Length: 54
Image (cartoon, rainbow, N blue to C red):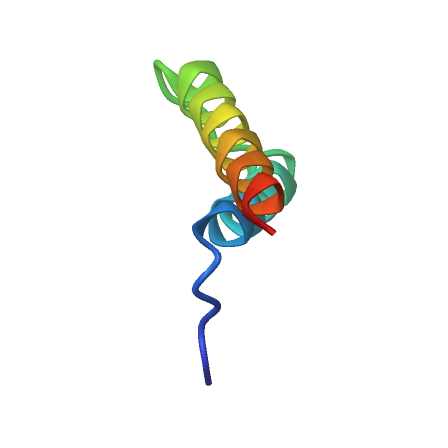
């Protein structure tokens, strides 16, 4: 399996997987909202930077 070199898309994929697993598995821990927010902001920023370079 080949992973993408676009780190924004990797973070977006991680965010999507986590956002699906959290309610499915009833996951919760202190700081979960901050982790999800950080992943979303980081993915968005990296995707925006990638788009501006092309």
